[in-house]
Image 1 (cartoon, rainbow, N blue to C red):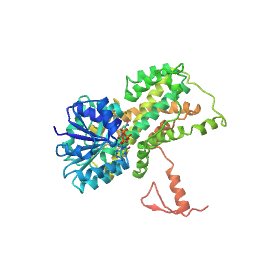
Image 2 (image 1 turned 45 degrees about the vertical axis):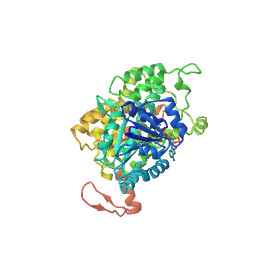
Image 3 (image 1 turned 120 degrees about the vertical axis):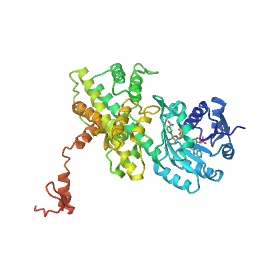
Amino acid sequence: MQKTQIGIIGLAVMGRSLALNMADHGFKVGGYNRSREVTDAVVKEYPHENFVPFYDLEELVKSQERPRKLLIMVKAGKPVDMVIEQLIPLLEEGDMILDGGNSFFEDTRRRETYLKEKGIYYFGTGVSGGEKGARFGPSIMPGGDKEAYKHIAPVLEAISAKAQGEPCCAYMGTDGAGHYVKMVHNGIEYADMQLIAEAYLLLKYAGGFTNKELADVFEAWNEGELKSYLIGITAGILREKDDFEAGELLDYIVDSAGQKGTGRWTSLESLKQGVNVSMITAACNARIMSNRVEERRAAKELFEHPQQKLAADKAAFEEKVRKGLYTAKIAAYAQGFDLLSHAASEYGWDLNYGKIASIFRAGCIIQAEFLDDITKAFGKNKALKNLMLDSFFRDGVNQGQESLRCILGLGIQNGIPVPAMSQAIAYIDAFRGMPVGANLIQAQRDCFGAHTYERTDREGSFHHDWRF
Ligand code: NBP
C-alpha cells in the first residue's frame, strides 16, 4: 500500500474537514478516531481515494512515510496529552506531531519542551475558519522548530486559504507562538463582533432603522473601508426570514451569547503582560452580562428607562455610526497587535506582524480589506509601537473620533449598552496623551502607604509628609 503522507487523529468536524481538504490537494491522508463509528461515518459519507481509514493508532503510524507527520484534532486540554502519550512509544526521532486544536499556548510550550527531549518535533498550529474554512481553506498559524517546519509547510500551505494568490499560512515562531497568535486572533474576533453588535443596536434604537434598512446599510458598508466577512454575513443575517413566524429570524433569537474561552484567555493574558486590551475584555463581559437572562428580565421591571431620543437625521447618523465603528475597529486591532508585540518580547518570538495580518486576509472570521492596511503599516515600520501611530491609521482615528463621541453620546442617552465602543474612545483618549488622573492616584498612594511619587519638574522619587 502507498505510504500515507499525513495522519489525522480525531475525525470530528474539524479533523474530518482538514483530512478531506488535504485529500483534495493530492496528499495521501490516514485518518483515525477513538470511536470507530466516527471513522466509518467519514468513509461512508465522504468517500475519497486519498483518504485511508485506520482503526488502530499503531497501524496509522506504521503507514506513514518518514519523517512521520501526525495532526491531532481532538478536544483541547487533557485529550491532547492523552493522544501524545499514546503516540510517543510509536514514534521515532525526527517525527512530528501537530496540534491543530484550540490549545492554550502554555500547554503547547510545555508539550513542545517535553517532546523535544524525546527527539520529536511538536507544532502548535492555530487553525481558523471553522468547519468551512477547514474544508476549503483555513487561515493557519503554525509554531515550532523553524528548521523542521519545511517538512510540514507544503501540506499546510497547500490546504490554506489563498489571498491574492498567497497562502494564508506562515511560520509564526517557536513553541507556543502559533497558538498564541490564534488566541489573540480570537480575542480580536470577539471585539470585532461586539462592535458590530453595538453598531446594530445604535442604528436600531437610536436611529430607528428597520431590519430591511439595516441590511441595506451593512451591505453598503461592505463596499467600503469596513468590507469584511463579518459585515457581509451581518447584512445577510438581517435579511433572513424566520421559518416559523412572520418577519426576520434575528428578532426571535434570544439576546444571550455563549463563549468557549479563547477571548477570556486573551484578556487574562493581557493582564499578565500589562497590556490594555480593554475592548476584548469588554466583549467578553458583554457576553457574560448577556447570559444573565433571568436577572435582566426581572430588573427590567425595577428600573426607569431613559426616554427614546432618535437621531434627527437618519442618513447623517448612519454615516457617523459607520465612521465610529471604523475608528473603534482601529483601536481594537491596535490593542490586539500591542499584546502580540509584548508577548514576542516575553517569550522570545520574532513575530512578523505584517505577515500575521496578511494571513488573516482569507479563510478566517476576521478577514477584511483593512488587514492589507495593517500589513502596509508594519511594512513601512517593522518596529511600529502601536498601530494608531501609523499615519494611515492615525488619520483614520482623527477623522472618525468625533463621530464615535457623537454616537456614544446618543447611545448612552438612550440607555443602549455600548461597552466596546466606550472602551475604544477611552483607549484613544488615554493614548493621545490626555491626563488620566494618575497624578492623583500617585498622591493617594503616597498619602496612605508612603509609596512615594514622581514629579513633573525634577528627577527622583519623593515622599511628602501629608499635613491633613
Ligand atoms: P471536538 O472539540 O468536539 O472534539 C471531538 C474529538 O475529540 C472527537 O474526535 C473525539 O473522539 C476526540 N476525543 C476526545 Br473528546 N477525547 C479524546 C481522547 N481522550 N482521546 C482521543 N480522542 C478524543 O472536535 P472539533 O469540533 O472537530 O474540534 C477539534 C479541535 O479544533 C478543538 O480543539 C477545537 O477547539 C478546535 N477548533 C474547532 C473549531 C470549530 O469550528 N469546531 C474551529 C477552530 C478550532 P470520539 O469521537 O471518540 O469522542
